[in-house]
Length: 268
Ligand code: G4P
Image 1 (cartoon, rainbow, N blue to C red):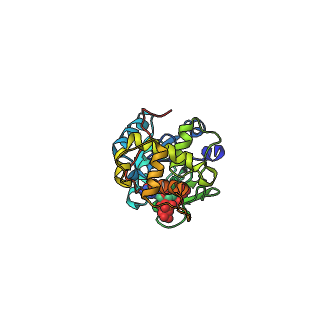
Image 2 (image 1 turned 90 degrees about the vertical axis):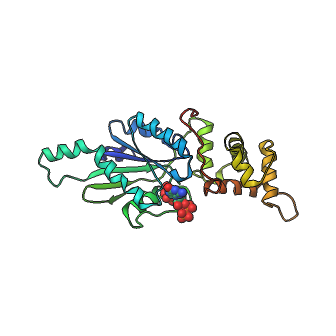
């Protein structure tokens, strides 16, 4: 990534609008110093709109150009061309002054963690299925240059996580949104923490979706949800593991409604 960044004029970072801080690779700030920066808050349709606006201000104040987006909608992705040209207007102007009429295209790197919607974004933006999409973390492999127009070339990079999260909170939030393969997670623990979060922040969603009147502690909540959803093993015993998957799937597929997991004032 370090080598690739040197080649590029602008870095487009996709973050998940539900966790715009935790899903942003902290290493890129060092690697990309001096480069133009655009943040796409993707899956904005799944996040709490009020909190997304707070994040928009937060990153704008740090000097980023910020776009909120549902990448499945092509029209929304087309805003990126204008944003790229605007942040690179000095370079375009410089090339023009030097008489480079057919200026070399702007080189934009697209990066983001697995499952953030990078392939979906590129497919919509480019207009045909060039990047493979999939629901498993890390489907995009190897780097790929994609010509968007005579003005802009995109470098698609693999979705990667960095070696060590700065806090447990960051790791959990990345797990909640499905960017870490569930097979390597303690799914029960992750789900209990997720229920803790919902209880504190979106208790009505829990009550309405799973028809629960009294919210007990998260262990009790999990077994209540398992009962309500009839997650039962063959012998009639309650299937808590199945309930965990179901709850996380409900969140990840948007069935729980618009939820943001962090605000600029509660990041660690
Ligand atoms: P990646 O390349 O970054 O790994 O992610 P990818 O594009 O494969 O997207 C992961 C999942 O997120 C896909 O859903 C995709 O449809 C969904 N997605 C991407 N962008 C957005 C967005 O802006 N809003 C919403 N709501 N969803 C988005 P999937 O269920 O895993 O696959 P599929 O059923 O769509 O094929």
